[in-house]
Length: 251
Image (cartoon, rainbow, N blue to C red; front, side, top):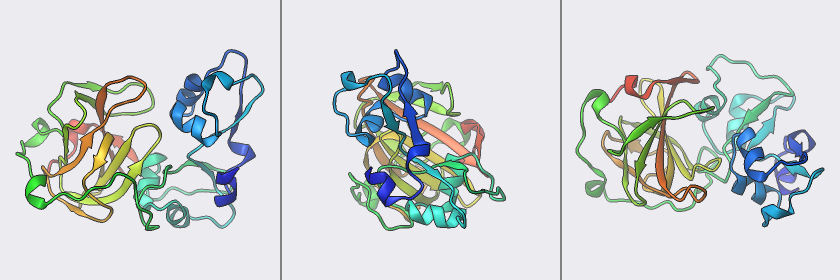
């Protein structure tokens, strides 16, 4: 398949053999991706075509090869090392070895490799500013929030398509682009080493490497095609480990 040609880590080790009664949606949830991403990776347009015994390619994963380093893998997938650490809950001193499976950014995000993410739009500085609150009272969106369940540790905010998504702290954009069924995603790293993840977006209003101010408009909220509603996902990491969003600095 195309991914196997482009990246030598993709292939037979990243496949799932469909069992009786399984669906795209159930398989996607199992591996932390979306049904749409899974279908596109396997060139299947109709979910009804799924049959027991089918071998599905699992996207957004990489098998560490001999001689690989985190820096080299990050460059290969167009991101910075902190993004790779965050996606895999690794600390800066973590060691990787051949055969390890790593989650990697999918969909062609804009990162160290110079790729350009789709739906990027520049916004004049004056339009990017928004009133900022203080401490844990300042959130990326004013909608009702709830704690995320499952593998993700963070919060989701209810809203409407087109709502502004605001930066809760200053920092630098270290990755932008689509990721694992969460729409367009923005990673902002602060000077204190915290990584703020804003997911579930539609239009992205910032670009890789850009300096971000607290209260700046980063993106507009999108719509989840499976749920038919808009939700912003907000997650914070430090040294590869999730941090309670309310405890993260607002500087």
